[in-house]
Image 1 (cartoon, rainbow, N blue to C red):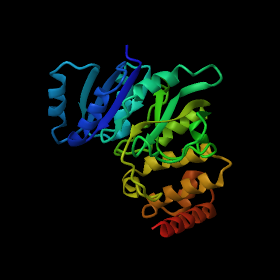
Image 2 (cartoon, rainbow, N blue to C red; image 1 turned 135 degrees about the horizontal axis):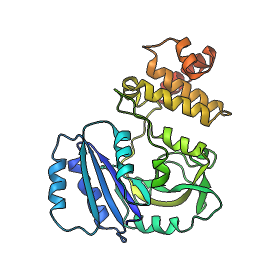
Image 3 (cartoon, rainbow, N blue to C red; image 1 turned 90 degrees about the horizontal axis):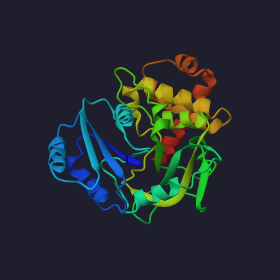
Image 4 (tube, rainbow, N blue to C red; image 1 turned 180 degrees about the vertical axis):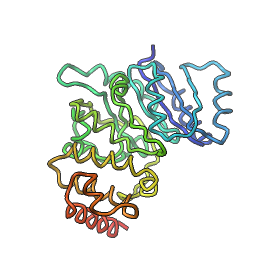
Length: 291
């Protein structure tokens, strides 16, 4: 039984996934499996994995092709098919440092009985030396996903969750929609009082594109129910934070401003019309001055 399932959802990334594969081959420890869910690719991804699977590998590789349904559905399928105790999502256009698995093993052994653990999390980097997002100067911090702002942990991180925890918290699947924010699940886990140990080492290299708070607005407009679930989750997770609440209201309103009234938005979110108006104005001003 592998300790870790490296899970990669992929869609038309045949030309990029080789770099990830090579980084897995270079790992100093090999007690992991690589589980790939192909989300309906139309390129040569399937042929690529047929060729890889025809030769011996130093770790198990499992490739499954599914109809296109979005990353969240792929994650749900991955969790159900995972053999590892830990589940590590690594996107197909990213890759791992050579000691990533070794460090995950080391940090997992440090977990004690002081908290109910969801897993551990390392840093993502633009390179081995340049960190993505914020990080703390201490060796590690124990915190819920909902406490990241408090502990200076904003920005993409390399979270490794216990597979059993993810099995208890699947992503909602909404008919006709193929995008949903991963934060919905991460904060649901936080509301259930689970912690992660956030350690201060880069294990994951990615091309991180900066953008405005509404950079996914096109996806939001195609997936309004998913964005509504996210907004409701934010309001529940941060009941005392006006910043998080107004941000959630504003982002949801931005996604549905052409399809529902201010009053309908307020009703769906369980808030006031004045809150919706203020949130919409503040978000518009933020994006205007961020250009």
